[in-house]
Image: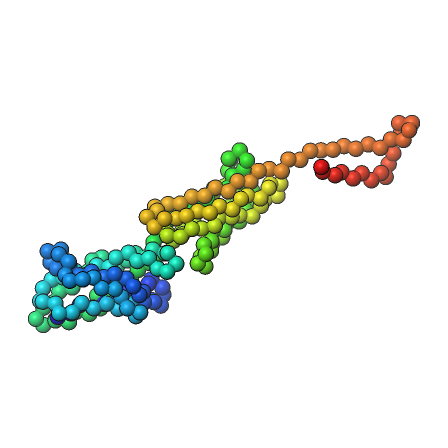
Length: 212
């Protein structure tokens, strides 16, 4: 007999995933033969199987962009070969990118939460980007694991720009975080007077202030 199926992503219109490792086990949990990998159509097949109870399991998959994919289906799936059903098909799996929550804190020079409104952007080199606005000093993003992100934000009035952060998120990460710090621009009040040689205040005088 044979057991076959397909592995696709979780898009509204599913796309096949090539290169996913699929393993077959018998009723005792013993691996049957060698694992196979899905083809360009996301399909796999096990052939020359005896009548019996089997289970099919897919492994986590890392794609060419280093994103890690996990199955969202029951894993493993049962597939029984009987005398009347020697061909078992449509043992299919759906996979989605593994994600974690990234918390980004926006603080002032004293590490206090910045309550001015800023736009925080998280991006990687593969086309993922997300921007959210916060005025509480903290914002969260859902990001795929396995890649490194650049975290940056806009600069509120009266503050110096923060330094963008590079945040690697490992494949086995359970969370991620980054902190963006803005130091306040120091200001002073300068009061200027102009007097003539007799000490009389003059009006309509233009003053220029230069920084050194």
